[in-house]
Image 1 (cartoon, one colour):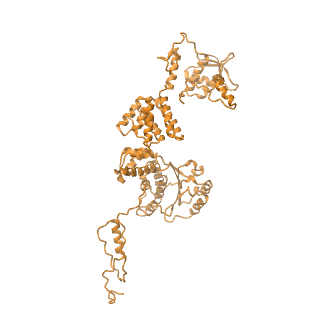
Image 2 (image 1 turned 135 degrees about the horizontal axis):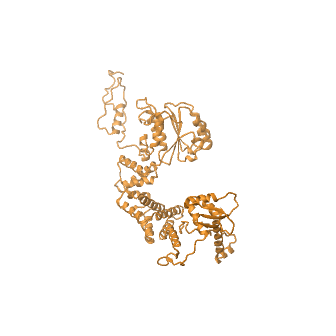
Length: 602
């Protein structure tokens, strides 16, 4: 068939060629309004059958949506936030060609363990845009190894999930493959995620290969539970502990993501998300994804703090401050009403008590630092400063301990709301009690001045006149005071010796005559002499003697406990209980020291 064949009709409108169809499809896909360039005519055209109408790709079709945690996965070490120390160590190792044969990335979920493993794979196999590069801490991201690793299709970078490949057969497959050189890369790299899930037999099978792998093989392990790895594996790897990302750094990162996504977000909303992420970039991006979708419900598309709180079931900060105010003021009805209000708004009881703990912590930090509280709003800074000025350090610490105890109760209770109400009421009533430390100090002052304390709440001054000539302290009281001084100075072992092994015969200024309360061969006198010198600054004469001796402090305490036990057992109700339940036991009868520091509400 030639151009001059007279038997064929002229080819004037036989339809578009294949090249024209391809050009038309591309133009429709990218929205190009310019006509497609005509394809060059073939040198020997043949009859062309009528082609079907071309199906063009609509311009509105886009890539499937990817969640933010995948879309913004770090592709270079400069995008890996919060792990500067690890990046610096890797850079030095690459620059000096001192690369380990096995790396172990540890840390909590979402801090970048698997992403770091892929970045290391890129760094070791990058050849640069010109194909002449070597291992580098700044992989180009353009060469074939970089792009293939980023897309998860490189034949020499094998990723394995140990959670679903736990057996020894899976590891033997790796052992068989490591003998062969890499197909197209510089190194054959095995990335094993959640490596702690491998069985013990699998670890044992891997040990020899892990210790002496071929020079073209690198192992990259990632785990959230490094304590479950055998020591034999840990000793064969170079370990990198990836840190939790600080909340301010996370908030800055989320702000950049919002700018790239074209989303308007309040700084306070991003701060709430960063705190809720608990140091995990992936968790935070997942929450941000949800917050963006939640913001679109009202048509404004703005990530607002109020909506994020509603979404996460968190208490409003002003509601937290009101709740703390009700606690400190002792207003039980207002306290319960505020709890019911927050619960009706969707705030979980555990989230509410955690919010109060966070508020107490921030007030304490503001009080200790003496500077302006750290808060985004002026109103909040003023409220925290007011709490810091009103509350003493002891009150704040006691409040924290009570909230901590309440948190455990709410977390494990069958009805968290009821448990929260009871825990907060206990804190409210405890706040009205006298501070144990101040109370003990007041009792000591009254005893020293010759007055006896009256029951708390009775009498204007709470004291009553004592006899004009107060009795001198007994030898046992004097000895007990010295033991307390030794104990308070940190010499706990010697204080225990003084309590348990010494029966005082005579005690005076810098002189102690004693009997030993046990038959141990060692002499406690040198230790006691040294301890008393440290607390009094004077040299003591300490010697054994004979004669009537007071019981040791331990014997005295045991006698008091026995007397208390006998008194309780003599009670008619207790007697009746033992008669009804002969195998019952009496517990909790040990007397508690008046100045032990234990609060009366524990």
